[in-house]
Length: 231
Image (cartoon, rainbow, N blue to C red; front, top):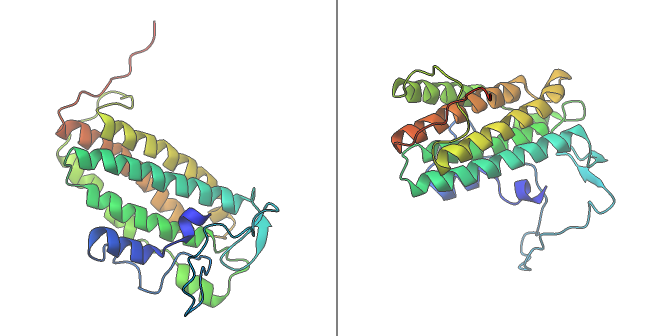
């Protein structure tokens, strides 16, 4: 889980964009992570800690669980989703798309999603919950972006296949990873271990990625492949 834990999400947002983009968060909300060095310790931290060598890992609450636990499966899927979006972002940057700041913000919010998932409510103290609460604001942002894209898109009259250029195809791939992440988060939310808005966000994010893929194809003048029944 090191890929999620090295840097706080807030710090990552500021470094990448030059300004605070996830307004729904406070500056002390961090993704739960390992402490790599103590104050005054100038040693270079090692990326490996060996604490998971026996097949167990820790939640933010300090609980040790098997790595195949549903919490870590959901975290892994969310991490993969962020990576897929990062790849799509690079393709979109190459084409000069103006919506890449949205992908920046989404990746930062996925850090918050991970924080919430990694804090099972059954073992969380109030201090844990305060740091990792997930709000509904990111869902409203996604809906607003989807509506703005849709205003510029031709009506969807056929099933389309992942296509429309590298950026568009990569966004479609991210959408399918998002659906998997949503499926793995659903039982965690259903049992009350994570905030319901986490599942809602992932549900809406897949819609956003689909719409953004179509928007990218349209702006690049690329043709989307239409589904035709095989004869």
